[in-house]
Length: 220
Picture 1 (spheres, rainbow, N blue to C red):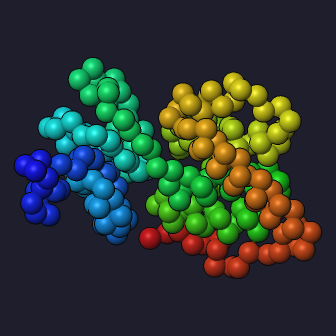
Picture 2: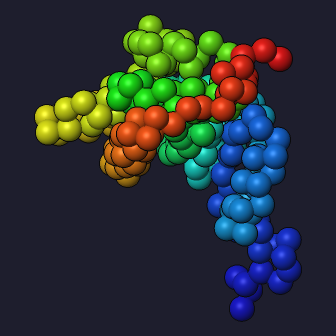
Picture 3: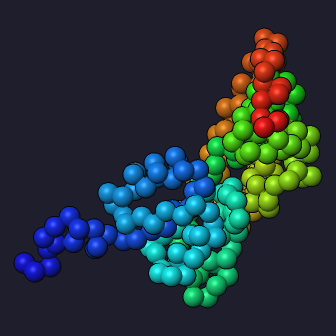
């Protein structure tokens, strides 16, 4: 049969091409390794480089981190979806470790959990490379230096935390408007619920954060 590739190189040419945008070099390398058996992967160091790749040759999919320098994943998604020539390209936004920690910090603050706010605030500062962010999110996420997608995520998480009985379809719709899937909504709710239990047990036992957590990630 003439349509069967005769070498690994030929076989790879028939695989769909995707663009992976990730600013962390180790994570980028890992994603390429994990996806290269099913796709031809073009790795990009930030959203702007990924956008250039998409404009150069339309991929089957764009997988992007959210928080990146030069152009974030959210900005990349917006640039693709508002360009008539690119809008058909599917974009998958990968929720970062920093966003998971944002959820934990915001909801732990709502639950008055000193241990989780301090410990996970340290992780948020490290993952986001933003020394002021954890304090902002813990105090008032609406005033924090975050984007609209992250505000929608935290609004949903805090409603699950404070008033879960009032969750309705419009709350899920608000998440979808910012690129979240129903599976993402489940994950946000699950993180909130899990740490709601942790917050209560930490308060019950008067757990105290390690002293080094207070300073971690605040200064270079």
